[in-house]
Image 1 (cartoon, rainbow, N blue to C red):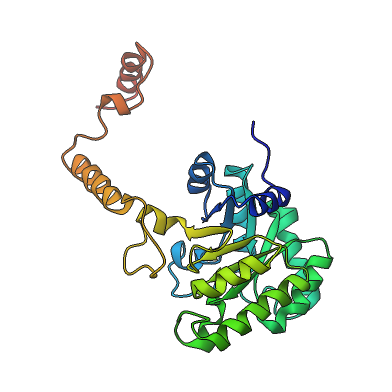
Image 2 (image 1 turned 135 degrees about the vertical axis):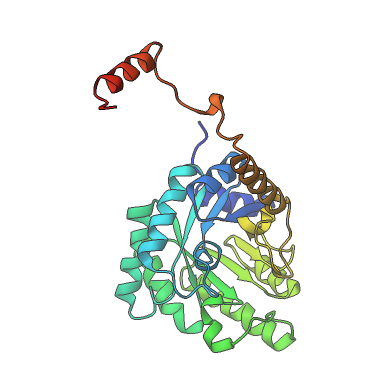
Amino acid sequence: MNARTTMADLLLAKHQRRLIAAVSCYDYTTASLVSQAGVEMILVGDSAAQMVLGFDSTLPVTMDFMVAITAAVRRAAPNAYLVGDMPFLSYHLSLGQAIRNAGRFLTEAGAQMVKIEATAAYADTVRAVSAAGIPVMAHIGLLPQRIAEMGRFQAKATTAEAAAELIELAERMIAAGASALLIEGTAAEAAQIITARSEVPVISCGSGPGCDGQILIAPDILGLSGGHPPKFAQAFGDLGARAIEAFQKYAEEVRAGRFPDAEHSYHMKPGEQQRLEGLLGGNNPA
């Protein structure tokens, strides 16, 4: 049985320049497949709000929901390095709240790290959670939890000034104790500089090839998302179309009376049907 991936393994991969494959998924069944594929890191992202619950942003998911699905993913993928995503308002009110909620991911869900969407204002939060012995992945660049403030998403660090600010923010997060960085929706040049300057693993989510690893959400990888996925996403399979075909075939077989057939039905033991008919006949007024 393979050993569980640890932070030491991820650091070694960075130093040996072995790229890290990470996937964001939200359920036992998918996580089991991801685990069997040998993916090193799984993030249980708050994008579950959209991909699982059908909301138009990440904001509505709760701590209880995130802990429950993270625990499900851990049961399916016991050896992956598991990161739990701190949802909106789970770390914003106080340092005590942040530590308490981050700790739930470790004690109740088996996560090894929590992810916090971080601006400079949350350096103290990263420091406090890290000081409590809870590894933190600081999420910088495009921050989905700030959609109400931004109104719409657009690529980050596309100018020299913005890139310099993001590089400084990354350094502040590491100085505050962040054990890893996730950079989303950021110009590849800035992300590459951050990665080269950082002693911690840096994972790219739509931030170019120059980071220590890459992450996409499972529905995008499988071709299940539909609609218009982000520019940086790529489908590595077409399971959406195949799933629709399978459901259509199932519906046709049901309507035609061909499913279920005898092979897919349970049956009484030999002789029991005759005994049942006798029992029913004896008690049947007709």
